[in-house]
Amino acid sequence: MLRNPTKLFIVASLWLTCLGIVLGLKTDTRNIGVANALSAFKENNAAFGSSSVALKTAVSLLSGKDTAAVLKARLDLKQSRMDYKRIEFFMDYFFESSSLIYNRPAKVEVDEPYMEYQEPSGFQVMEAMLFDDDPFSHKKALMEQAELLASSAADLDALLYGFEGTDKELLESIRLELVKVITLSITGYDAPELKSGIEESYQSVFAIRQVLQPYLAYGQSDLSSQLSENLGKTLDYLKAHPDFDSFNRMEFLSTYALPLQEQLGKFITALSLSFNQKSSLNYGAKHIFSKEAIPAEAFTAMGTSKPLKAALGKKLFFENALSGNLKRNCSSCHRPDQYFCDGLKTSLAFDAKTFVQRNAPTLLYAGFQYAQFWDGRVKTLTEQIKAVIANPLEMNGNHAVVLAGLNKSNIYKAEFLKAFPASGADPVSMKNLSDALAAYLMELAPMNSSFDRYIAGDKKAMNASEVEGFNLFMGKAQCGSCHFAPLFNGLIPPLYKRTEYEILGTPANDDFEHPKKDTDSGRFGFFPIEYYQEAFKTPTVRNAAMTAPYMHNGVFKDLNKVVEFYNQGGGAGLHLNQPQQTLSAKPLHLSDDEVKKIVAFIESLTDKI
Image (cartoon, rainbow, N blue to C red; front, side, top):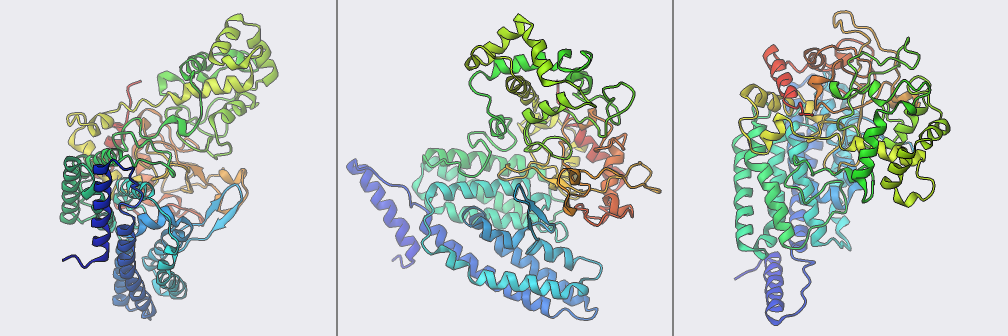
């Protein structure tokens, strides 16, 4: 006899739904799994509440130089994180503002455009202090954080009062949690010192399976059984391979996680419960590494005649009439034969004698960000295009003069009208010009590298060193915790709606024995607040093997030097004064062989263009 109220609800819901189908009645699938999810949340939150109290107790016992007490506090922090991971999907999706208390990055974040500072709090802040050289000096701050966690965890059930979540929302929440496992948890993004990311991934997938139980009973038997089987295999693999540094991320993704994501998508679609309220993702894509997973439409709206706009944009890319001296064009600094770079430390300026301030990055995948220029001072490609054309150091083109010149060409007027038929008698405008160029740039995202072919199923596309390099990149080397998959840039998973800035302490020279401080203030020059001092946008490492030199100032000539810079702990690790550095100053302890393998992986990200 069933005595569990949650099970009684599930059985009753399924029985009524089936009865409705038999009788030809219209059924409401709104609450197939909501009650089960709420019950699981309460159960898992109870565990989280207990472990947060234990963490608070452990922190209170820190005294003197008792290293055993520190180890105990670290273990209790890890356990509390484990318990939280079983409710993370629910908190992040339904109670986002409340969830920020628990697992916010250990750095001040700026909420733009309102310029509100979000002070770090929760697990990551505690981790940084507990792994500091002198954790005892942080006891007061640790107690404040532990008290915050314990007291707020005790009140979490109150958030459920009047809860009105639906099946569609619930299934999107676990869909996004799986993306988080694939792109963040296995990289150690939010637990770099504890290195508990693999064990935490187990907890997240366990929670996903908990939520799915009533849907698996409700759905098509073949899809349900396949999904259920793969959930079990994924959990078994994570449980059998908990060690962070040795974890085979490529095997996990290829054999378990990506097929699981594909099956989950098909299952949700079969239930007619597909829903996208939160993210920039295309849920119709096979998995996160599919070319169509992050659609261009999330960044710019080109309309129905996009191909015509892109064709016009490609022609304009090589058009000297966009410059003030009729001698320069976009390809002057972004040469297609050099993977849309120019190979210079910083590009030659308009006068052909001096140089601009910063390195010209590749335009491949450039549009797949929510900020443009190294300092992110504009939000869209169209804004960037207009700014570059007018910049005296770059194109030095007067917008009115440029348009007047193009209007003298009947060919251009006809092509603009075809690309922008709603423009009427005045198709040659700066808006249309920038839209056309942006449409072309958005097409510069081939995703046909050896890595892309490998992840799509061609296991001969990468060699063993490249695969091991991927595992290091996404794990021990912590590269994947800033260069996020699948674009390996600063577009933050799982929502892909925000671009990240980092302070690395990049020096002005490449002599690690005698580094010199760079004078470029980065985003601070646009937003003069201390947290943006020397902050720069995180570019893609796709095609990086072809786009030397590197960094905003072009200081590093080869990838080995770049990886070694991170290996040393960035500028602070080189003993430069970098008080706001967001990159950990601790060495990564990568061997020469590991550095070579990471470079080999980056080389496997080279597209055929």
